[in-house]
Image (tube, rainbow, N blue to C red; front, side, top):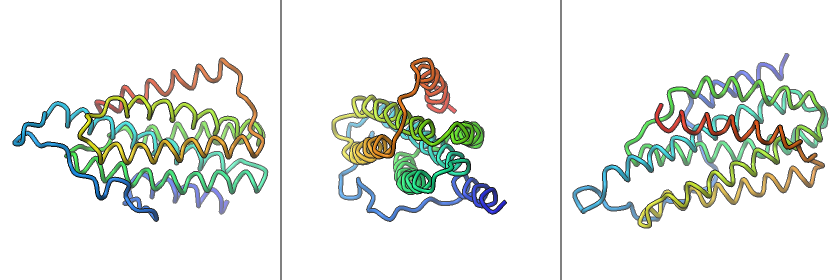
Length: 210
């Protein structure tokens, strides 16, 4: 019961509280890109804000996923690995939220829906056993890494602040995947990987606009 209460509290904090980061904001010293008054493009700024909203939504899903996995994981070492990843994802959440505000954007209105679905998925993967639980974690991080690479390629050259945030996130996600493999992650079946990519496309395309 205590674990359920903690998971519920974590969900409320993720969705409604101001996230905090122990590490410095990666783009804190980088200059802002040109404004419209200085020749910058409003459409470009709006696109980057939407990309950061997608990334913020992804971090909401990651928090829910790790919370669900931790709830049903059987091995304490696995739980600790998931909790460490979740702590770093909280920092990503804080960075994305700050960058969204700087760009004049907003968070996705569907975050509670994404959180609930991801939490359920995480809890189910945890029940399958630790090697599959970690395998799901590793594959998730690999797909997030590719997703971040795509966003980095879309950033304007002068947006060093957004680039700094996404590059640090990419580095952390890569390390999470390696850690999961080191703890015994199983390689997921190809149909499962395809299903994960399909679900990710739905989330990213929807949260870009809503």
